[in-house]
Image 1 (tube, rainbow, N blue to C red):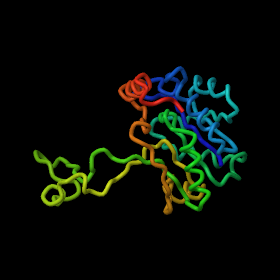
Image 2: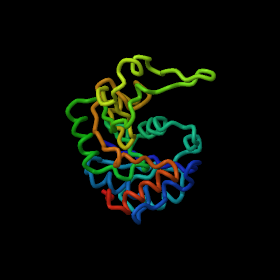
Image 3: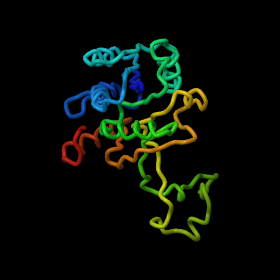
Image 4: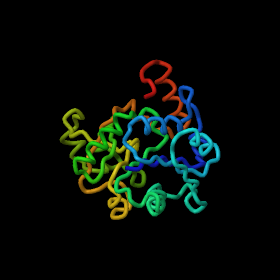
Length: 228
C-alpha cells in the first residue's frame, strides 16, 4: 500500500499551515511520523509544491513528489493528484492507497492500522468518521425571508427529541483509504463497500483556520490530548 500526504502551498485561510508547529513539530512532520509509525505503507509519498515542506520531508525516508504547476492550484481536487501519482511507473503496481492530510494532527498510527485491517478484510474503501454533534435532521435552509426544514417538518413537529434520533456521522478526512479501482471508477475514495474507523470529536480536529489551530494548541496545553 502507498500512503500519500498532500501538502500544497498557498493556503488562504491559514497561510503556512503545513509547516506551522504544534507541540514543537510541524504538521507535515507529524503526518509523516504517524504514517511511518503505523508500518502499513510500502511507500510513503509527500506531494507538495512548497519548498519548505519539501525540505522538511527530505529528513525522512519518504518519496517526494514535487507537484507540477497544473496540480498546484487551490481548485485542484486531491483525487487528481492521486491519479497523477498512480500513473507513474514506480507506483503503478500498487493496488491500495491511503490519503493522509497533514491537517489531522491527532490521527494515531492505530487508526491507520485499523483502516488497513478493514481493507485487508475485503472492503473496497475505508473512511475515518466522527459523530455529528448536532443532528443534521434539524438543518434549516433559507427561502427568501423565511427558513424551512432541509429534510422534513416531521423532525420539528413529531420527533423533536435529539436523543431518539439515529446518530449520523461526517467524514473527518483524517484517513481516506481505498483500492486503486475505486479512485478511477468513482473519481474519489468512497466505494460501494466502505468500512469506517471512528475517531472521537476531540481527536478529529481538522486544522484549516487559525481558530482550529488555537483549539488544537489548547487541547495540548490543558493535557486533554497528547500528540500521537
